[in-house]
Length: 365
Ligand code: SF4
Ligand code: SF4
Image 1 (cartoon, protein in one colour):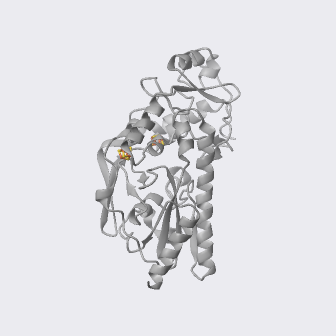
Image 2: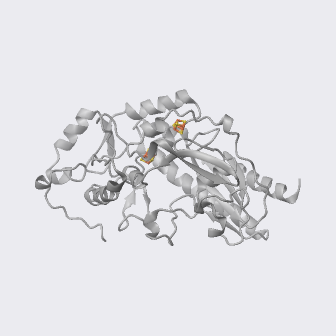
Image 3: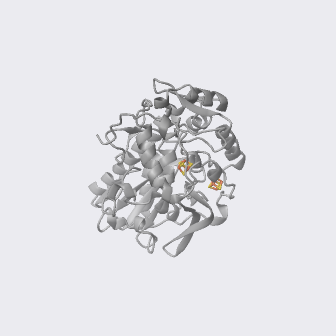
């Protein structure tokens, strides 16, 4: 085993020892020709390699989240796994650094480039974890565009360490073993319509091509996954969001819908837990209300279907005055909102202008 291979294997073992379910190595050569978000030099001048890894989310908490029995359990697991992955990346980066290879632990999430035209709100990550992961064989790209692993499907949090150490790259997983069978349950579970039903995006890295469904405006996911709204068109199921603001059809309508969603939902009572996102005005928190496309994508098709059924047969979420959330039948949910004052209703659903009284909001704080 030469040094390059020995160091790469050490890095993989380091991460697997601490709970990663898959890890691999990409290099500036294997990422060559990739999108700007695969430029390792953006985070570390002189970088030669990146170690990519995945840490699984708790499947029991996912089950209870999709069945709308417990929102807080998965929310806490997801937030803490993200922090754990960031910490683990820092741990390996520090180790390498101490051994003479300057390195950088990439944050698992919520880091955006500040040098794009609109800065933070362009939501362009410093590096794309999923591109590094697919090129280094941590998983495949599913039709959803999510990274899907052999053992835990898409229900993982990705991390990466960028280093000046010259590591031997690992191969992508064999395409013929990819479990994604175009079941399209990711699309069926996405109320925002982020994934194009026909068109695909193909990226080339190091001479290899990887495809997934083209993503439409990311403001779609911001609106729904951000928790501002989340009722299915048929009114029979929802995400964990208690909001019912309409979800536009055209990409260009989502920016205004998102702004309206943030402002109109402002007076809602706060949901317990959650996390702080730098794009939220003031110090307002965000809560986990969706993630469906990721959470239901299990390697076993029967399990995927079962999870989809859990999601779509577990009713509609309403919010109580103390901020708590509860899943009830669609009829009960309609009566719950109808019993509110017009002012309260306007925090959850589109109320005709003449019926909506002015609400004091402080989003600019
Ligand atoms: S839900 Fe189905 S179509 Fe979507 S990525 Fe997973 S396996 Fe592929
Ligand atoms: S997280 Fe939710 S809203 Fe965002 S793409 Fe996935 S299913 Fe759609």
